[in-house]
Structure formats: C-alpha cells, structure tokens
Length: 290
Image (tube, rainbow, N blue to C red; front, side, top):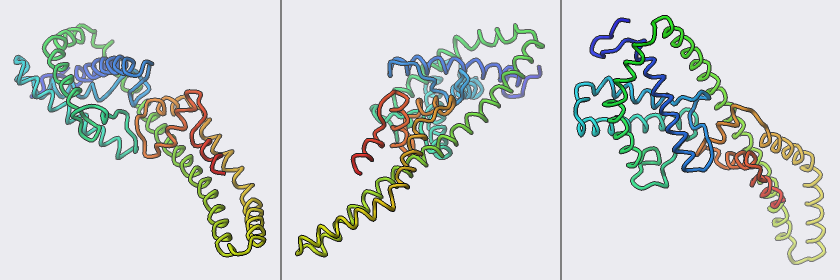
C-alpha cells in the first residue's frame, strides 16, 4: 500500500488503526460508565462496539504529533489540547444537530459548559502518550503482519458496517427526537386543558362572587361544558401519550438509555423511567392536575 506523503501511513493502515482505536475507546467508555453508574451502557453514538471520536482522536495525534512522539511532556500537552478541542467540538456539534448530549460534566470541577472538564483532558493526554509511545508501534506491526487480501476484506466489511450503522443511528436519533417532541407537546396540551378549566372557574366565580347561588350555577355549567368538549380529546391524548412512552424499539431504546440531556428533558425522563420500570412522572402529574 502506498504511503501518503507527510502522513507516513497508507489509507489502508489508517483505517485499520481507526477501527482498532475506536474499539479500544469504546471499551474504556464502557468500563468508565459501568464504574460510574453501576450498570452496562453502550455509550457510543453507533450500535457497534466502537467510538469513532476516540479513533479519530488517536489518528489525529499519531499524524500531527509524530515529530514530537519521542518526547513525553510536549506530547502530553499537545495531546491534551487536541483531544479536549475535539471532544468539545463533537459535543457542540451533536447538540446542534440532534439537540442532545451523550455526556455531561457539569457535576465535575473545572468543566466548561459541561462538554469538557480538566479530569478528562488530563486523562486523554496521559492516555495518548501511553498509546503513541508504547501501544501504537505494536498496532502497526500487527497491521503489517495481516495478509493484504485478508486486510482488504476486513476494511471493506468494516466500512460497510460503519456506514450502515451510521445511517441507522442517525435515523434512530431523528425518530427519538420526534417522539420526544410529541410527548412534550401532549404533556403541555394536557396541562393547558386543566389550566383552562381552572381559569374559567375562577373567572365565573369572580363575576358573581356576591351571589352564592349563581356561583354554584356558573361553576357547574362551566365544568359540565368543558368536560363534554374535552373528555374525548383528553382520552385520546392520554392514550397517545402512553403509547409513545411505552413504545419499544431496539435502536431508540438504547439511545434513550444513554442520553444524558435532551431539549425535551421531561420526555427523556419519562421514557427512562419506563425503561427502568417506574411510573412516568408526566402521567402522574397530569392525572393530579385533572
């Protein structure tokens, strides 16, 4: 395979390196989140056991910092800065594209907007130094030891799997966003319905507050009319709300479990509670308000 000038590796080597380091990054994420939450979570954007951001990070470090790879402290500083910038950019991009966060460091000291934090930045820097100085040479030897034909088969299969998984994951996120939007919308409609009833009762009461009999008549009349008009619609809203919260889909289910924040945060909580087998908060609050 032809080596790319100024990079020092062929596309074939770079892709296999990307796959390897993406898998290692996914393993690290699983161990870290299992330790933090006490349960297994696939923290990656993709369904496959890879974290592309980790793979891209190591590839960028390998390419850009090759001239200083024999040093320790300069390499550590450079890796820390680059990986921190990459993590912030990807987190910002995901928020803009999908209105969601897969990680949030707001609870940690020395964080910036919850997207990056000092602890992780130092961890990235130290990890990259170890990877580049000690592991990467072995990775290259292992890749070069693979017969070219076998390696090309791996490249083609992995490229197809990653492409398909990316499309599926993007579609799943869009579907989940639409589901959350509708859940949030229904919740607001149910809340506004109860508010309207209360406002009409209050308005009627104020107008005839000097006459007890009229107060009772207005109250009963308003309640009866509102109930007649809204009972059927409210039942439909409740039914749709329950269906959306209870809906089970392998791809969106995994995403809902791993998301940390979302623009429709109440809907995310409701779905997460359902996944955990709890009564959804929104349903309870809506029933109370009625």
